[in-house]
Image (tube, rainbow over all chains, first blue to last red):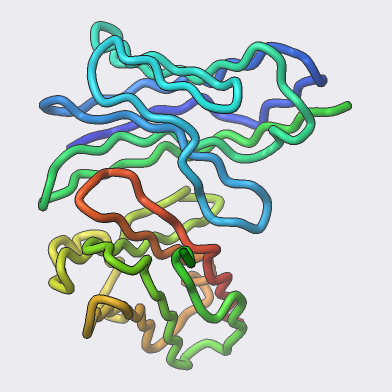
Amino acid sequence: GNSVTQMEGPVTLSEEAFLTINCTYTATGYPSLFWYVQYPGEGLQLLLKATKADDKGSNKGFEATYRKETTSFHLEKGSVQVSDSAVYFCFVGSGGSNYKLTFGKGTLLTVNP
Amino acid sequence: DAGVIQSPRHEVTEMGQEVTLRCKPISGHNSLFWYRQTMMRGLELLIYFNNNVPIDDSGMPEDRFSAKMPNASFSTLKIQPSEPRDSAVYFCASTRGTLIQYFGAGTRLSVL
């Protein structure tokens, strides 16, 4: 089955610092890759996605590139804000009517002013 | 459009009691997922439905857990009898033919 290995947290940064959260995966076939974000007390929401090799997903200043050769999908942001403090989940998914879905364990990010 | 609606938001119960968690997916979505989130194990997929039919329940931890989807707009996750180790946040998510899932706000369950 699929598996996701995500950088363990917590990660603590100062405002305007550069962020990288590593994610690698194992999967058969051609999965789609996602990053979800969970703010305190809320459910997960989609941050960005990539559906094929070399695709770059981007949203709210965050980026991640689907690297099939290294089976990675690292999340980056050039300048974090206090409002980015949340838990970030890497997610690998495939299938139409028969889903194979795997989340990473999540990385807690705290951004200090 | 309303998002995925879960109830209750918080549930506190005593060991041995029956617990029922409820979920209303987004209208028009035909797949529904139940997840459990704990600090130790992260986010685990318990079961998912396509067109109201359970497809994969391999993540359901044991027979004490059961899930139903009687129609396209309602699903329940039941734990009977509940145990303290069932304490977690339970999420419901839905989608329509894609891998992009829309999550509810979750139910925080505490079993004393």
